[in-house]
Image (cartoon, rainbow, N blue to C red; front, side):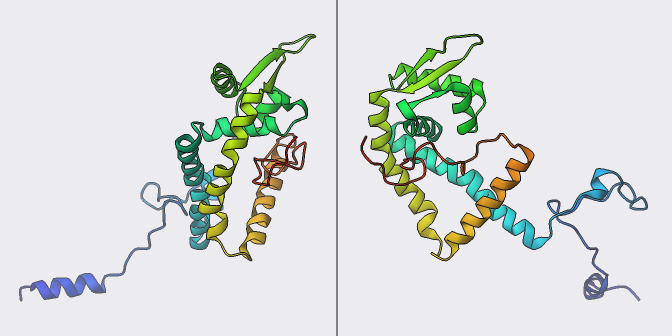
Amino acid sequence: MASTADDTGERRRRRPRQGSASKATAPAEVGSGSRKPTGPVAETRWLNGDELAAWLANSAIMISLPAALDARMQREAQLTFFEYMVLSVLSEQPARTLQMSTLAARTAASLSRLSHVVGRLEKRELITRTRIPGSGRRTNATLTEAGYEVVVAAAPGHVAAVREYLIDEIEPQDLATLRRIGAAVDAAIKREHPDAVTAMSPPAETSTTRSGQRRTAD
């Protein structure tokens, strides 16, 4: 007896479905499936569904938020977000000066990237660089008065963006959770890199545009 379309559909519905693992949570099968993965693949602690969802949500903070802050900073203050961070970190220091290597660490940038950006800011007379006497090629970066005025003028817009994109979008009780998560990540990074200067490292002064606190006049 010939099979009908309904018969074929019924057999397909009855056929056991093969389980499929998300590429983000488990490795794809290798070969015919008769051999089990070995080495790093077999030892990897793949993310489960809840862990993956949490990671992807956090990725929006790491990727989308900086991009949004950068676009807004360029539109409103004619600075990139990284340029603003450089100016802001310098504004917090005694004499508004830091050694370039220290400034690179505080902004989580390579020295080559920082040198390129500082050179651009130097042309705008927002930063000056001076050679440190002694052995080695050490250089200080100093925020000029014009640079200080620029970062102070940009700070309210930066804080407004932080509020709009993050702080005001979460419940007040979630702030403690967000802070706890940030502290845990910060601690994990410092365990791996003890000398790392992260966003939670205390600034030289308590009044800071970078952290979103209100600046006090010098």
